[in-house]
Length: 307
Image (cartoon, rainbow, N blue to C red; front, side):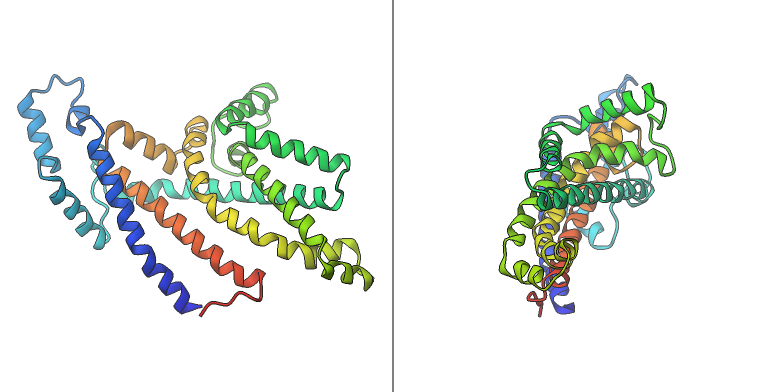
């Protein structure tokens, strides 16, 4: 297992550097000068703008700038933010816990609701509970999270006053953002879990388990569900990217100071070092989560072994 993890980590290095190169080129191809944005409204002269470009290192050739970025990255330095003049690693470190907490809460909501609805729909196929679960999954996929966020605020914060409209510390401030971000995710899990569980329940080993006198709940949980979870675990890993991108919208709506809001501010100001640092962190999280998914296969399926 250790050798497999080591090989995967080494294979991820070219992907990380490929992501940094792509983001670097895109940022410099987009129209707009960070120096002009920073000096906007100050009636700066062309000489002042040129001096700021020199101080930021933007007057150098792109190849030199990228080489300098990679050199710092190899040494664990993400650079200094153009706007705050603080190190990008420090900026990300301040907001990453908020995004990680939101992502974890969203995964808990999505997995709990999605697996529960999927199992109920498969066990009571054709019943009103199955129909309700199917309708829930259709709505979850169809409704965008930005609209759902506004709707949740209007109902539970403005009308009922049960929960805060703006995200605050503690569990109460996490409920509305995690539900908004996790609803569509849980709907996808519901459909996938139901379909795979129905397929697993039709296998001969399930009939054998029933013939031995096991209860329906024991057959589903101890035998069929474990096999049905393998595609769901794959989906969890693949949806991490969508989860982090959706967090940008949800964090902005609920006023959370997280990785998404930091990325929005950096993009608006063309803060190159901060944008590159945020994208790099997101890419690393995505790669690590998918590595964890591969390792989880061995726990779910004894036939899977890694050398």
